[in-house]
Length: 110
Ligand SMILES: [Zn+2]
Image (tube, rainbow, N blue to C red; front, side, top):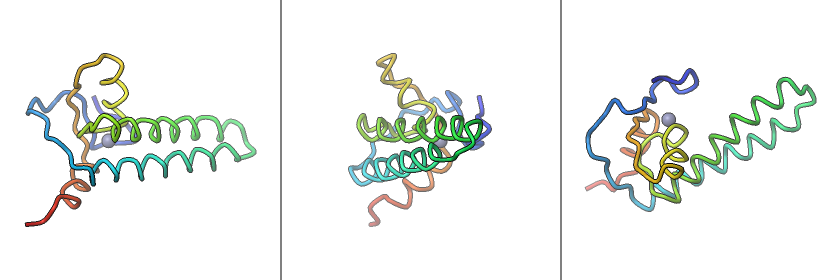
Protein backbone atom coordinates (compact mmCIF):
# COMPACT_ATOMS: atom_id res chain seq x y z
CA UNK A 1 0.00 0.00 0.00
CA UNK A 2 1.33 3.42 -0.88
CA UNK A 3 0.31 6.70 0.67
CA UNK A 4 0.02 9.70 -1.62
CA UNK A 5 1.82 11.99 0.82
CA UNK A 6 4.69 9.60 1.38
CA UNK A 7 5.23 7.83 -1.93
CA UNK A 8 8.32 6.04 -0.67
CA UNK A 9 6.56 4.49 2.31
CA UNK A 10 5.01 1.04 2.11
CA UNK A 11 3.39 -1.44 4.46
CA UNK A 12 4.50 -5.01 4.76
CA UNK A 13 6.43 -5.34 1.53
CA UNK A 14 9.71 -5.86 3.27
CA UNK A 15 9.76 -8.93 5.48
CA UNK A 16 13.36 -8.48 6.53
CA UNK A 17 13.88 -8.44 10.28
CA UNK A 18 13.76 -4.99 11.67
CA UNK A 19 16.87 -3.21 12.79
CA UNK A 20 17.39 -1.48 16.10
CA UNK A 21 17.71 2.27 16.13
CA UNK A 22 20.10 4.30 18.19
CA UNK A 23 19.16 6.93 20.74
CA UNK A 24 20.30 9.54 18.24
CA UNK A 25 17.88 8.20 15.67
CA UNK A 26 15.11 8.19 18.27
CA UNK A 27 15.94 11.77 19.17
CA UNK A 28 15.71 12.70 15.49
CA UNK A 29 12.18 11.28 15.41
CA UNK A 30 11.20 13.35 18.45
CA UNK A 31 12.57 16.48 16.80
CA UNK A 32 10.73 15.78 13.54
CA UNK A 33 7.58 14.93 15.51
CA UNK A 34 7.72 18.22 17.40
CA UNK A 35 8.24 19.98 14.08
CA UNK A 36 5.04 18.41 12.75
CA UNK A 37 3.15 19.36 15.93
CA UNK A 38 4.34 22.95 15.50
CA UNK A 39 3.08 22.82 11.92
CA UNK A 40 -0.25 21.56 13.22
CA UNK A 41 -0.47 24.56 15.51
CA UNK A 42 0.34 26.85 12.56
CA UNK A 43 -2.29 25.19 10.36
CA UNK A 44 -4.91 25.51 13.11
CA UNK A 45 -4.53 29.28 12.90
CA UNK A 46 -5.41 29.36 9.20
CA UNK A 47 -8.71 31.29 9.10
CA UNK A 48 -10.18 29.12 6.33
CA UNK A 49 -11.60 26.06 8.06
CA UNK A 50 -11.67 23.73 5.06
CA UNK A 51 -7.91 24.26 4.81
CA UNK A 52 -7.11 24.47 8.53
CA UNK A 53 -8.81 21.25 9.62
CA UNK A 54 -7.49 18.64 7.18
CA UNK A 55 -3.96 20.05 7.10
CA UNK A 56 -3.68 20.29 10.89
CA UNK A 57 -5.15 16.80 11.22
CA UNK A 58 -2.49 15.35 8.91
CA UNK A 59 0.29 17.32 10.61
CA UNK A 60 -1.02 16.16 13.99
CA UNK A 61 -1.01 12.54 12.87
CA UNK A 62 2.56 12.85 11.57
CA UNK A 63 3.65 14.56 14.78
CA UNK A 64 2.04 12.05 17.11
CA UNK A 65 3.27 9.04 15.13
CA UNK A 66 6.86 10.30 15.08
CA UNK A 67 6.82 10.86 18.83
CA UNK A 68 5.36 7.37 19.31
CA UNK A 69 8.03 5.93 16.99
CA UNK A 70 10.73 7.54 19.11
CA UNK A 71 9.09 6.28 22.29
CA UNK A 72 8.84 2.62 21.18
CA UNK A 73 12.05 2.80 19.07
CA UNK A 74 10.11 1.96 15.94
CA UNK A 75 12.66 1.80 13.12
CA UNK A 76 10.43 2.07 10.04
CA UNK A 77 7.82 4.45 8.71
CA UNK A 78 6.35 6.27 11.74
CA UNK A 79 3.18 7.59 10.12
CA UNK A 80 2.23 4.17 8.79
CA UNK A 81 3.36 1.67 11.40
CA UNK A 82 4.24 3.25 14.75
CA UNK A 83 0.78 3.94 16.20
CA UNK A 84 -0.64 0.78 14.59
CA UNK A 85 2.17 -1.28 16.18
CA UNK A 86 1.26 0.13 19.60
CA UNK A 87 -2.43 -0.53 19.08
CA UNK A 88 -2.09 -4.18 18.09
CA UNK A 89 0.98 -4.69 20.32
CA UNK A 90 2.94 -6.27 17.52
CA UNK A 91 5.66 -4.97 15.25
CA UNK A 92 4.30 -4.07 11.82
CA UNK A 93 6.97 -4.02 9.12
CA UNK A 94 6.92 -0.93 6.92
CA UNK A 95 9.44 0.89 4.80
CA UNK A 96 10.21 4.57 4.91
CA UNK A 97 12.36 6.08 2.17
CA UNK A 98 12.98 9.40 3.94
CA UNK A 99 13.85 7.76 7.27
CA UNK A 100 16.10 5.16 5.63
CA UNK A 101 18.16 8.00 4.22
CA UNK A 102 18.07 10.02 7.42
CA UNK A 103 18.97 7.02 9.61
CA UNK A 104 21.91 6.20 7.38
CA UNK A 105 23.10 9.74 7.80
CA UNK A 106 22.63 9.60 11.58
CA UNK A 107 24.41 6.29 11.97
CA UNK A 108 27.75 6.52 13.77
CA UNK A 109 30.49 6.62 11.18
CA UNK A 110 33.40 4.28 11.62
ZN1 LIG B 1 7.26 7.40 6.07
